[in-house]
Every structure is written in C-alpha cells, then in structure tokens.
Amino acid sequence: MFKNLSKYYDSLSYHCPSSKEMTERILKQIRLRDPQPVIANIGFGKGNECLLLAQHYPKIIAIEENDRYLEAFEKQIAQEKLSDKIRIVKAPFNMLPFETGYFDLILSEGGISYSDFGSRIGLWKPFLKNGGYLALSELCILKETELPYELADYLCDSYPFREIETVDYKITQIKDTGYKVCGQYKFPDSCWFEYYRDMHNCYEEMPERWKNSKEGYQVMEYIEECQYIYSMYKDYFCYMYFILRKPLN
Image (cartoon, rainbow, N blue to C red; front, side, top):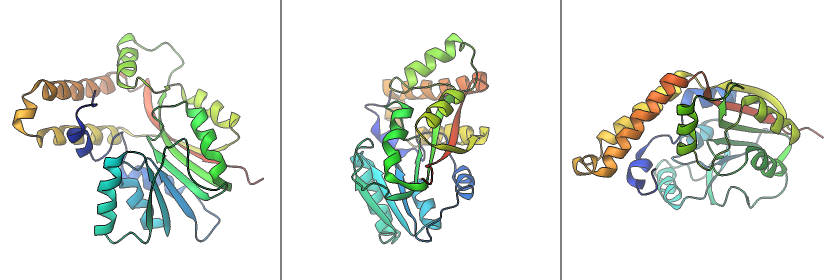
C-alpha cells in the first residue's frame, strides 16, 4: 500500500500500535543482572523506543536496515547530544554483526515483518547473554475459530509477508526455540486509537494537492478501513508484547 508513499509513511510517529507507556511497562518487568548492560533496539524506525531506552540504560545499539530511518535518527541523536549513549548500526535483521552473547536485552517493536516469528527469535537468541531478555511486540490472533472473511481478507492484504498466528501458537514457537516466557501483555485500545489518530494527523498535514490525488484518496480509504476493522473485530486480533528470557545455562 505505502510502497510509493514514503513521505506520508515516514511522517508517522509509529509504524505499528505502540506508546511510551506500553514500552515503559515492559521495561519495568525486566531485571538485568549486569550494572552496565548492552541493549539492542532492532528495527528502531523513528527512534521512539530507542530514545526511551537511553533514559534507562547507558549503552544502546540502534539497529536498522532502512537508510531513510538511519539518516534521520543519526541527525536527531546528534542534535540531542546522545551520540555517547546510542550507537547506530546498519545491518539486516537476520544477519546481525555481533559476537555471541553480546546483548543483555534485545527490544524490537513490530520488527518482525517479513519472516517466520519462530525463525527470527531463533536467529536473535545467540546474541543474547545467558539470562538475557528479548522483548518484542507481534500481531497475533486471539481466537482459535475461523476468522470472519472480511477480517481474514484485510489481514492478508495489509500484511502479505507476515505470519499471523494465535497467541498459543506463538508461545509454542517461543518454547520450541528454548526461551522462557516471562510475560505477555495485550496492547490496550489506547495504543490503537493513538496510532489511528497519528495516521489522520499526518494525512491532514500533507499538501492539499496530494490529498486530492488518487494516492491521497487511497490512503484515506485505508485509514478508514483500518479503524473499521479494529472496531468490528478487535476481539479476534491484537498486538501482543512478549518478554522472553534465554536460560542461564
């Protein structure tokens, strides 16, 4: 949908439902053993979670593969004088250039978009220290029953490269990969409403000529469809935050 709409898409504060409050809630559940932990934020996007991590921890490795996000965030951390705390690394998410057992915590919000969930968390596991944590958000199905056709069609069109399965299926993948589940938290409605509000606000800030174009109309139709689907079928799907831990031995 947004392949040729980078200016609009890049103006969004978040690229999936989230909030500062939700990330803070997750960080409060994590107790790191090392007093000087090394933290990875994989797929930092606009940098919201990375800046929040920098308020809590002394050393953050910000990992991204999109050049537009890399350039913009590099300027931002320089302006905010955080270059001593945040190091930016360009790397594909499935080929991290780090040593085994390098990180105390990996955090990734909406960072698994184009691969199997179980495969990705398995690829990241070696980079965690024993006893280290992986905290990540993921789109999940809430019911074992067959999805309404309208919802299934929407999910297929909106997330064509994404594996969307039930929470229980994700838990099985997590355990099969050798992690311990330390917590799972369903995103509240407020995260979704704020996400859609941001989509509307960014749309309104776009030039009138663009809003009146075919692309502009398509974006507005998509925003309205997203809101409609969530209001109608939110009992069937959600974003879930998982806190995983690599065993100590």
